[in-house]
Image (cartoon, rainbow, N blue to C red; front, side, top):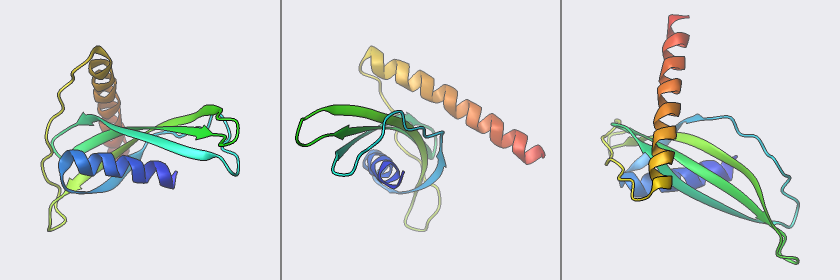
Length: 126
């Protein structure tokens, strides 16, 4: 989880050109084990950009360095907020989808963000 959070944060920092703080990690389930000695590769991309928040998709791949066998272990979605020098949330650039896959990922991310906001609102009402 720590590696996924760090990879997601780096993608969000590159996009926003600011420091970020983690505000949410969606469910993280491991579909395959990562064995001792495996090489771990993480690919993180920004899939949603709101006013100050961003969602990243982090895909984790384990590779046996001897056989070269690669296994997708899990994918996680993490949300970050960009912070200015004073530690105040700051605006982030929007995203531009360049492919059908990116358009689909952005739409799915917007739906996840709407769900998160609705859940936060319900929790606040108690």
